Length: 254
Length: 213
Image 1 (cartoon, rainbow over the protein chains, first blue to last red):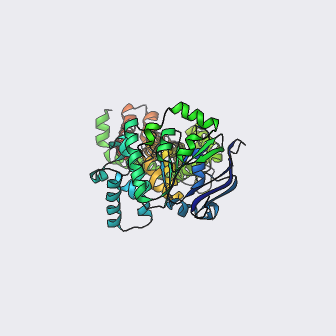
Image 2: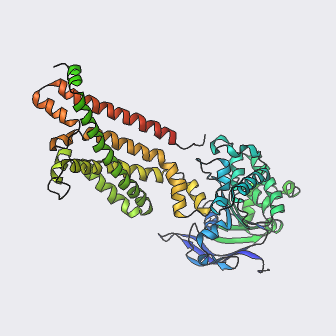
Image 3: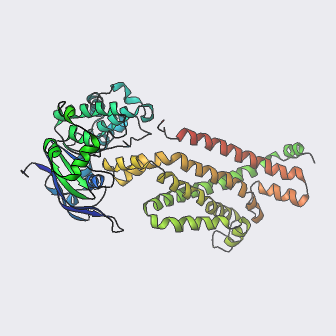
């Protein structure tokens, strides 16, 4: 394992709630430069929490997370978050902002000149497969799929080298989701971001993951590339495969 | 005496009293906004204070208005002038709807929106002014509306301690057992309340955030 190109490093990370309930226990893993590290697990496995510890929406209880070799606690939290794009299932677009202002918010806060923001918004809308004409619309005027695309565009706005994605395509119908997954994959081949991607969907994990980390009850069960992952003798993985059916047809499409 | 005749004969006095009424209500609402909104914001940041602050504002509301005017009478500076006293009392009454609505408005902002904003690296102030307050504006304004309409009614009672306003006509009419005089105070007060309600209601609607369909 080559740690030199690790962009996000978890070392013995634990997180428990104030009431003592343990959410994550001794999690050690790393996301390497340019890869999509998928955190796979069922509800309550701690995968979303793991993501939020990286951009410090939650503060870890024990252990250490490093981003670019620097412990997250030593980062200025605002700088850290602007260095990391963040996309969530509910998208969380600002309903009182136009699409342009939604996408351009971080560049605006970073004092980019106005023309550069406008250009950037236009480029990003094209990049995520939307017509730049929708820039002046409000979120409620878009479809669910369009909103998710805007969410991804917004996460990419200030060109952060790292992306945290929490089931960003989760709320979509299967066809739209499949479109977005494929487009995201080709986008990622161009952009080469370091991505941590949370999902409960084994199909999505296999399709998108450079490597897959399986979490269960706050612990890391296995971490491997999709091919090895499916062959693993780990009983929990076998259960997943059983639940999600065959993958032969899917592997061919990658 | 006929109502219209009384109004026609006393239109200057009625106009003056209306202005006085408006002044008392306007200043007290402004003060309540200046105190209530920051306090409402504060209790969204320090949830441990929320219960006691809302309880205190609730208790103030339960004090009968005449009694509150009476309690405040011995207060230095405030008690010296009936107008000051009336403004303070009305401000205290208006606090509850403002604090409560500010709190409800901000905590009612979609959790995903707030989380996305924080995750994108907005500072606490940017989150408050760019996201939370604009999205809570219509709920906060509804609080202003409730406070103002309530104050217009309550301010008539302030005439009992000599603070002036349209209540003066109402009390005069009561002692004279003259409905025309009572109405000369009550009708403009009711119209004022209606106008405030309509105007603020319109503003509230305009400020309502665009909601997801």
